[in-house]
Length: 406
Image (cartoon, rainbow, N blue to C red; front, side, top):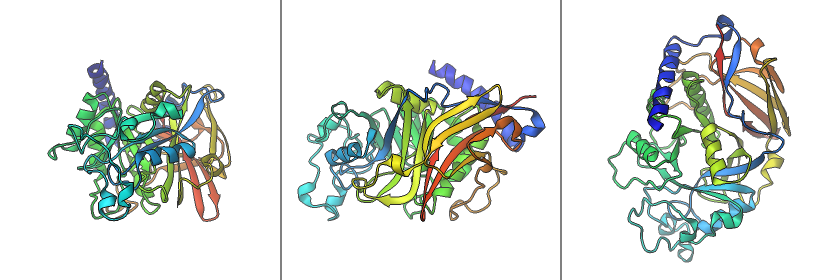
């Protein structure tokens, strides 16, 4: 079945790439716009539950500053019900104890005995590392690793860690696939001497080679405010090349290493029940949204997220009228965003924090008639913004796929 699905996806993608290579085609030139991919199609907005998810976190098992039980408790107390510990597969435990940043008496004694794939082992199950089992806390825990030898990859739902340092990103992703895992690419825009930025063509090749049944998306909100346009621009550029045939879901994560200084960025799953099956299915189908603010603060002390961020209550799609309506609250503005005006770079991706054109904002307001918006092309995503002094809080939807009738 996987091979058949991959073949179908490849044929659809080949058609899409022919169109993309010819440049952006406006809806007004090709006929009426139709929604052919809706990540929220199966959502019952009145009855489904919202669950905050932290999908990229670290503990003393790699380069985090806290023991697992402290991390789990902090996220549960902050209202998170979905959590993945994604310690780096390249690090031995207690890095910050050795560096003098964490007292020796607080060091993590786990794992004991060392597993066969130490130190590339996952921090799983939680009970082997001193924390309660997720179900005891009313949480869904996801086994994970941050594959970190090359471009960092969030690897979920499997126990893979890269012991040898001779596997490139494609080999690693195929291994995730073969272990029935899911993956998304981490923080592309980091500006650091230990990170090598890649051109948009590199990301194109990864998503062309690896199907959506296991490479589900990319981190869009993680990096500092200085580099967030890099990640958002890359996402828009990839969506303009692949949608609607091949979705690339956007993830928000805080990449937590220290609880006292956490990026306010996370994902929210809209699911019928809190279960392993529902969470994984939503991750595959894009049935979640994500949120990001310009602030950092202590996870253990900040106000509840629903008091800070714009709230998304429902998205209603009236296909007969060609209208999408957003029902939200606690926001100042709703922006509707489609493909960038150009796929050509505007600056050097290695040095600039805005090397590609961002997606076009085609409308503001809670309702959009997509058949009367000629700028729409390939995809449509929505952002809800709220300003609070110098801080900006944003809620991002995953993209809708658009097609034009002849």
